[in-house]
Amino acid sequence: MSLFRKKKRALKKPQLLTPSKLVSQKENTPTSSSLTETEKQIKEILGNNEDLRIKHFKIFGQFSAACVYFSSLVDKDSLNKDILKPLMYEPEHLIGKEKPLISIKIQYESEIDEKESVKIQLSDSAILKIIEKETSKKIKGMVEKFIASTQKKKADIFGFGEHFRAKLPQYWNKNVKTKAKWDEIYQNVTFDVKVDAHIHRVGMKSK
Figure 1: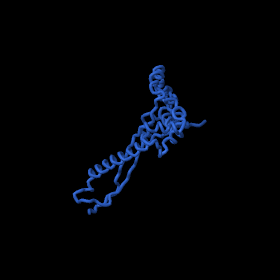
Figure 2 (figure 1 turned 120 degrees about the vertical axis):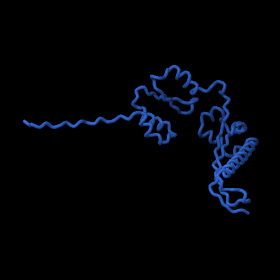
Figure 3 (figure 1 turned 180 degrees about the horizontal axis):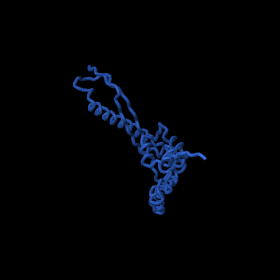
Figure 4 (figure 1 turned 90 degrees about the vertical axis):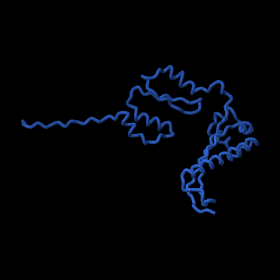
């Protein structure tokens, strides 16, 4: 009979990270543009909660989306009636009256090799910001004017219609269907033009 007893090693229980700790670990992780990947990130943080629910639906019947909520904190009838239904079904007053909106973002980079006057202090960042702002404003006006001229002539020279047909087939099949119809619609398309001008090199010579 042994006079010595072997000490039992205490097994360490795995530590469960709280949601706040998981969030802090992932706060620098960029949100994915993929709905599936975003859901995966949410589940990694809140997946141990039994009340977590993820409901999939389509906005206006076209665009995949997901609603994340806790069943113990949400009234399901109110969720369906007041939040999901308005997003899933197109409002009656908009049916058949869809007006396309096209967003154009322009990144414009330039250099100033010379300046015409010694009075212009290009070393001043505030002056450069003013130049960039005025440049953006001028380019935006030029682009909008040119697009308006193509709309007036019903000439979609940039192929926006082809983009709609490829990326939004439901809209195309429902509202456009033919190139001739698109030419008519193109006249009333709304364009949102944004220009970001940036000066990344400055010369210090003056004439």
